[in-house]
Length: 547
Ligand code: NAP
Image (cartoon, rainbow, N blue to C red; front, side):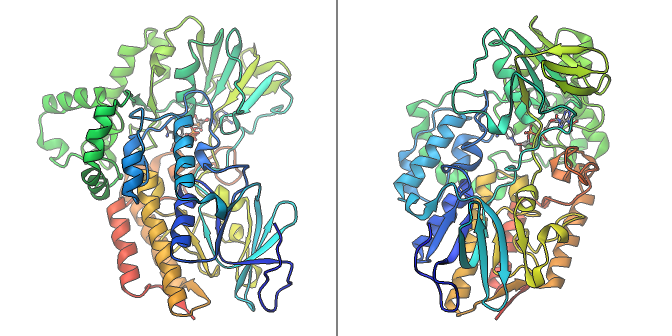
């Protein structure tokens, strides 16, 4: 990858670009398109052997969108919208990956991408006003600007359990599920973890394996996905509504078509509430969460009443009352952690070949060469599936050695939680923009909707800088402190502050993240976030010093 096109003053065997984009997922694909469309000399570096990010990985059984497919796709190109036919309301991983490849090929973007280029370090050179980027294997490139599109859920975490490497059967973290099919038939399978991923896997494989044992530490609230195919006629109708669909997504807090009910929880009768919940439970997607009364998110009493409604639904679906009670969360209410959507999840526990092990009662002691030892008994397995989640939001940054002014490490700066300006920049780390970074709205809304806005904003900033012949920009310390305080304040307004999920930076498998009190996401709703980004740009990039 090394060519002779260095900049003055740099070693000539180091390749230089105006902008380096890191990560070829949904964000990176669009970012490299925008940059090259406006004439930047830009390259995209991707650690994997191909593009797709989340959808290049996560090939586990049952992996699919829980956003409506047609709200997840890019909105920037009418031709793309006209050409692509989503086959299912919640499209599966292979189709999602095919879509991203289709986009990259349609706009001839691969020529700007380099695969197997895992960025290990990014060091700021204050004298040269350049970033020096080291790629695994020893290559180095320099760039004036870096835009990271490294993802929110791209740093998977294995459980911190003794003996995890000692298992002699097959074992995978869901993120690293192999390309080649993994045999399921006739096998004894364990799933550890019952988040959105585990819940998808369990519903998908329960009727395909000989025995399935689910190791659940804490249950999650979840509700039916209600997926269905999209016919040619329906896709034609969706195409005719794309403007309306994206306009709706732009005005809802979650970036979906689901608009919250603002009538007031206590202003309608209980009977009306129940009728509404019955209807939403049977509708597709996140309506049950995001079309619900806004009080669900802020009012303990309203949340408790609704949670009890969902608990009753679980009791109706799971035949064994003891198992049903174990599947009902006690430590948090519905919707204050990210809600998994399920297909046949609760019914899986009615099968004779499926058992639930409550490891809050009988913890896993260790993984053995042949299975899993709990405090109660030893279980033998052919295959162990770790659906144990991610070092979310900040993990992808922590895995790169990022050093700013005076060699300060980003990991050190963020040791007690991220501090950013707009979820996009960090004081002391000039010429670096994070798309869907910590404290941005991407994580708390329909990812691609927010990502498109962030990419447009990031591209606008580097265009502004180029047009004004600026070689260095940096978030002001005061602006960063103010934003970080604003983010902390938003947490205080929502019940989510009490959750132990990735929205509060919780992960029991990462040192220092076990408590879940880090302010990693933006809770003000996607429309307000976009308004702020827009006003900052209109104010000549308020809070950002350019020179
Ligand atoms: P997750 O929500 O963090 O769930 C991880 C699960 O593993 C939890 O049940 C956790 O239990 C358990 N776990 C972790 N470490 C463990 C240990 N040492 N021992 C026992 N259990 C352990 O992760 P995820 O399910 O991968 O989902 C993460 C996010 O990815 C979701 O919230 C969602 O945003 C996204 N996602 C989206 C889709 C989609 O449909 N589009 C699908 C999957 C995921 P505790 O709760 O007790 O910690």
